[in-house]
Length: 231
Ligand code: T5A
Figure (tube, rainbow, N blue to C red):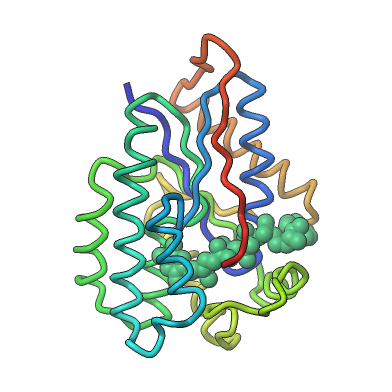
């Protein structure tokens, strides 16, 4: 028995966590087993790494070091949370995953592609996304949305990067969607909340129909929804 692994990707403030929360509730109501996790994060160890990378403490050691830290956090999340849930037949909704490393550390960070893909293969074994929703919007719109919810310590290490880098990341995600059309669906995240929700629901419905997915829970399942607190 294997569940479904659905990842959510995109630039800063694209609305992923808002939609994941809503979608998890919807799927639970329909009787699906749902687990929500995020990257970097999900486990105590990965949350500790999250603090190190998002605070900017690792930046001075270079983008390769940051890439390794993200991969280490991913390995822990995959082994401790994602793989066991998938093995139990759960739908896993993950806020960012391997495509964020490809884009942030690869496209905009300049880390060697072979190095990144080797780490990706090593840590995602048995847990490759079945479906990836890419939330696309102009970076200035996303950053302005994110700014509304910044903690008092302000933007994190990646939110501080200039618009040119943020644009490169947007294009990086769109390129992945084009290269892997069977796995990726682009959602126009610049639209008002209700329209984004509708587009996401339609994408999920079409995917579930494609893979003939029906609710499997015998009783109402419990989602382990993790809070999306800043570092
Ligand atoms: N990173 C991560 C890497 O560099 N490499 C990696 O391998 C990984 C895994 C993670 C950072 O780490 C980097 C990428 C990131 O920079 P994070 O805080 O988790 O840090 O960053 P984000 O995932 O970007 O989280 P955000 O909270 O900034 O963005 P979300 O989750 O996409 O957006 P959300 O839902 O919190 O919404 C932001 C605001 O917009 C509003 C919401 O209410 C909220 O106020 N909103 C809308 N407003 C108008 N219209 C809509 N349609 C809206 N949707 C949401």
